Amino acid sequence: MLVAFLILLQMGCMLYLIISGSRASQAVNWVLVAISLVVSLQIVSTRDKGAYKLTWVFLILLFPVFGGLLYLVFNFQTSTKKFSRQIQAAQEMAAPLFYLPGDCFLQAARQAPQHMAQMRYLQQFVGFPVYGHSQTTYFPSGKAKLERLLLELERAERYIFLEYFIVQQGVMWDSIFQVLRRKAAQGVDVRLLYDDLGCFLLLPTDFPQQMERAGIRCAVFSPFRPMLTARQNNRDHRKIISIDGKVAFTGGINLADEYIDVYEKHGRWKDAGIMVEGAAAWSFTLMFLQMWSLYQKQPEDFAGYYPWADGPCPQQSDGLVQPYADSPMDKENVGEHVYMQMIAGAKDYLYITTPYLIVDDSMVSALCLAAKSGVDVRIITPHKWDKWLVHMTTRSYYRELIQGGVRIYEYTEGFIHAKTFVSDDEVATVGTTNMDFRSLYLHFECGVWMCGSRAVGEVKSDFLQTLQVCQEITEEDCRCGFFTRLAQDVIRLVAPLM
Image 1 (cartoon, rainbow, N blue to C red):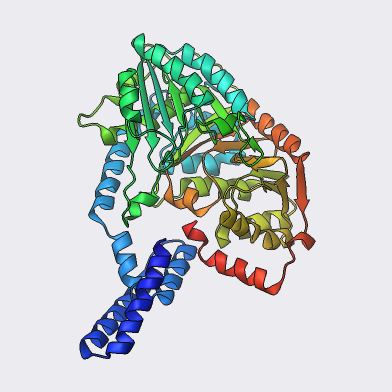
Image 2: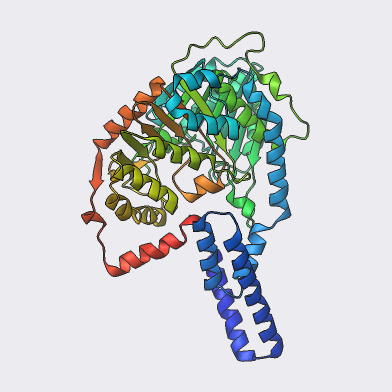
């Protein structure tokens, strides 16, 4: 809609300038073009991803009169800067509390020295510690997650914190809501934070009030406004449930009926989730409280929610667990760096599931280099799409990856929404980050990196089982006519906007 409006506006402006020919109109035209030129030079000099630079310069060339003004209006806004400062303040307040369960970095270094780079980056640079005294359980479907989730919710004693991109009333939400309402009546602190754009047209306008009447504290992340603002791009795409700081859930599964296959949407819905028990679960409590604090007038004592203040966490460990979060406000692309380090560190195999495959040249090169170096790199994407244009863009990457030795499969039973990496029977990550520009650079995301945990093998087994209902894409399948290939190349230019 925005692009169509700009085209019409520019056509009207151009027509007016041609017809009028006045000195004033010519002066305005030259001023706007000069602004676009200066903005283009500024874009090239920034430290943003090359794909973003190319997209913006392309748009300015396409709309030379208004392109520069569009960039200035879109990127330099007081509200966005204020929001960024609030996020940073919340992160700084919580940063030291991630270490309340203790620091087991040296122990982890002795246990898995081959993965020191990953652990060092997450703990020492971005502040997400590696934990022992933790266990992980992998869920290969929304149904499996829901069954365990309902059991764990019933055991809550102090608090239940939920943070989701999509919440939709139906079988899944109603079954969870019944437990939440009952727990709230028992005095458990129940809170729900959901993304307004993710739930756009899915929830009634008075949904927060309905929750408050049920005893559930509710907040809406970044309420959607039909206006041109960069902040509307920064969505809360995380899926988090923290129960007493002792148990936490994350992964790709939202709270809507398609995620448990109650009704068919794009065929069978394949997804993945992870449950963390023990010391590492505490990280998700802090992640939630950081975001929740943006909507509270009075600061909270985050440390007061720590569950093991009277003694050490008693949970037995089945491996190393390192939860992490990613914010678009700090320009540190944590989710991308976790993926890139797993690609670079793979020695035998690397198996990936993702609903979208729209990445920049550096990740394409990393995947191809791993495959050319003898690593068995396989990626599963959907065969049935949820967004036609995004799916066509995903397919535009197939040819280059297959020629580089990467094996591509499409899930034929429906739509695969899981975001998983697993490598060498040693490490895996399950989270919310898609392999596309929005997840990697624009959204708030989270995930769990695991080393030696039982769930690592479960992720691999699920991938291999899913392969049985996939079709492998060959280089022959990627052949297309001149105009189709041209369209794919043009689509790739605007991929960062998808």
